[in-house]
Image (tube, rainbow, N blue to C red; front, side, top):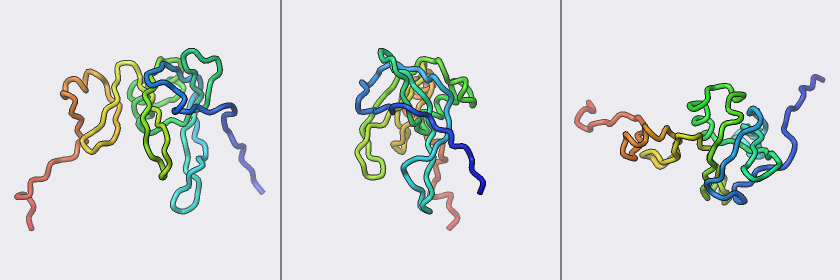
Length: 153
């Protein structure tokens, strides 16, 4: 039988419910994909993107599962390689939400010069503050507007 080495980060986990909204933090490791406790429809484990984060005023780095919205912002701000995400000051914004029917506190990692807002469909996005300001606070989903008169049937 062939076995593959399981790479996972040990230690305590970040809990959004225990963090004050607006606190500063820095990632102190690169991000790795790990199996999640949630399952796909076929029963296989979902994956989560995990890194170590150090919260201002705390000595211990914690594991954090980074959501897709935060990853997109980190890619935009610092590039595609998560090694380059380390050491930059981030603001943690929290929001109470439901995930798989369970009440949780979602944490967003906001790079300096970025803001979290909602797009026209109500989904969170993290964009550069100057772009947000130019859009007068209205974030488009970039979906084309369809005029009913243009539909041929």
